[in-house]
Length: 591
Image 1 (cartoon, rainbow, N blue to C red):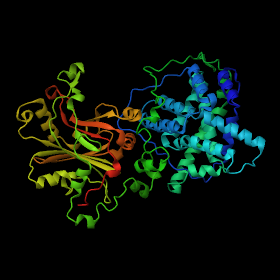
Image 2 (cartoon, rainbow, N blue to C red):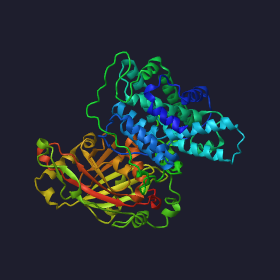
Image 3 (tube, rainbow, N blue to C red):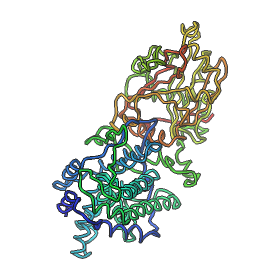
Image 4 (tube, rainbow, N blue to C red):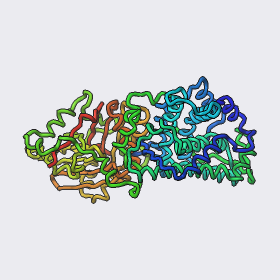
């Protein structure tokens, strides 16, 4: 069967209709069982913080696809479950990353991910054919049952991805693009490949998991973890995806255009015979290299423990009307026993315990000051030549980093006023320096980074670019600060996907995220950033959080200089962490 399927791909220019076996089976499954009550959990694939852009889609060569297919099918060498889960994880992140980009980019991501599942759909065909020939007398523990379980496990990640809002949007856009190309005569290899491999794979996967006689083994792969209303939403998305694909494959103009396809020379078919031209600036989409899924930390939280992903992204991409308040609160788990009244009255400081558990240093599970020179900032002539230079010394001293779990009462919105955090405790010790407090909220965790201003700093006492920009920053309104406060993250050591999701470039976080600032003149300025308010940033943060034990990261913040007398830019502070184990984090006292 697989040899026949490969032959079909090689000779697809001679095909005159879309009568693949996938189509008939898929239509029956996707359209005939719309009322199926099967509940399917949400896929928790992470994702990333501010933007790994610049990777665009280039049309694939037919020969490359054949090689990829031959490699996947040779000797039954299909993509591993780990590889498929990793591709789904990458795909979901990219779909969110390209949410505001052109539809062609999202379609390219969808094609790349779905195509990897094609060998397992072929495997499902073969098993169905064998079962039809032998009858259905196999015992649950027989070889047939084992093979079906294997197929279910390997197709489950795709089924879960198709339940996501971003994936459904990509499927609908891909179907629309094929329809338009057939109508105006601009069909190319990409569209043909989509109709003959990608769309049938989507249809067969959806029909397999929506059929009423779904094998019992599938129940283990889809144990419900969310309310029925949530499951209904995701089931409807599967059905919408199947209908969108089915409708375009059944359109007479699409069938005719595919029948008249002239092969991978990219000659076009259709009434207008208009030769398509590549979009300006198109580049290859950077797909995870083979073996990336096997890097340390690459699949943390997404191996066989799909439910652990919900800790981060039970609310990652759903609209408000699709979530209950219970689900929203589930993203903020309570600490057990850490902040109870009994513990608070024992006279022990939770802050001291947290600092001892996550100390300052260079060992594993610790925080440190990072090297400022590893970051680039706008140079003195940036406005004329866009030249950047290595950063000089930071303007502030890194006083403290506190990384903790959010407690039962929710996130701490004013770290400066909390009795179990560094700013107030340090004030009690007589420290009167001005504090710049960065309060990062990313449920179920929170981080408070404090910089201290030396009142005798040379840059502060003289009329320097740093002093001018700093004083202007303090005098700004909250909205103005949102447009100039920048951060840069650097993943120095870590998995490929995390490095791609968190590029080393400045991001004005106040634009995509909710950011509030509170200034008490002469005492402190606190900036509060809610990462959970940004979908893409939430995904990126989840990717980082699940790989923390294998990461060495550095972070810096700065104020964007937009005037000549504010250049060159200077960093406010630099911090870093390495190999952090989140299971060792605790909650502050509730005070």
